[in-house]
Image: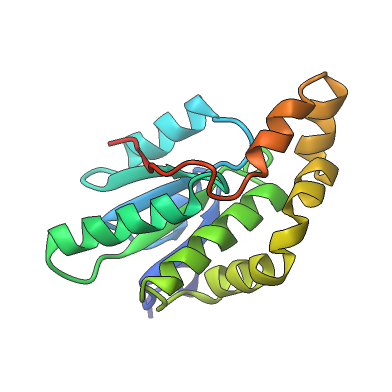
Length: 173
């Protein structure tokens, strides 16, 4: 039996940190989800470990654009494509801001008909939907948001909470 943590029976999957690439089944598309800031080293590690995959960087700011880019990539590949959402998290651990961003991307994928999701993605998506109006507060109150605000970088937190403020997806490779 395949390890259920691989989520291989689902089209859209979710896990945390670079270890996600060892746990999740291989995918043609990998989305690094990093809601506040851009962890360049993490993105590079995920990209290096995602041989042959198209890699996007997703956040709340570009959730819909990322979902559309995923759909476009799937159409270009000519068939159903596996998608791994790899959340940066707080040193690979749960981070509310990345979970909300994954939910926003999951919601936008679902709106485009890509909805065969692992339970992990479904929970993130269904968590995002009713909390969408509270995103600014939730990011500000998150551990990362509080830490950045305390260091004088509250403007970055406020900017990160703007859902769909960017119309372009960020394609890494």
